[in-house]
Length: 316
Image (cartoon, rainbow, N blue to C red):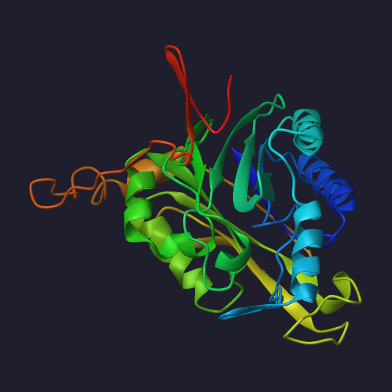
């Protein structure tokens, strides 16, 4: 299966223009015969790099609330018109699409990955379990109900977002589902990221496809309150997207400081070759010593009981 990893930036604050851009990159990947296309974390809705939303301990500002209201408006409901457009783009390309979005439910935003099939179906989603540092101000927490994997020609595909990849138990939960195409939409563009991706590929004996945005200060609105720089040419996120094979060998990238489409052909036999001497969730697991329990139940704060049916969050 030929895959493509997209490295480019959102049109921050303009969701429709960002969807336009996503459609263009999906088509570009299709022109190179890619059967799976991976986008960065928070591509639709935007990653608020350098933003603080006016929050310090014990204090919130009116300007920060206005900033959050704008960010809230740029988020999307899943499913909704934006997911319909992305599904149509996936179907036109005949490719799986893995898309980072900011999802809105009730008054909470979630950093989410959406999965689309080559026929345009919205297969499912993964909500980031653990937002990092300042992300916790604006993003809610996912739960174990959104840790899916999906069948592809190269094996099972799933996604783990950014620093979730530093959570050993979450990685183990993915390995135990026999993941072969391990997608890592991220906002981490530091030199330490690529070795982490190599470690995960070698640990899981899986292909790792990591996608990060390339974005400058000038790609944000002029009135965006950025703590990093107000120089339009300043690079806020430099990319570093990469594709790694199951033995930890980098087979595409990393690419920095430019838009890029990385491509590679995945060979399922390479996964089997790697499992000769190491299968982290199988022969190497030692369940007599270690066991992991994963709660896959959706945790709704309100349960509506109506006769024999019980639904979380709403009547059905």
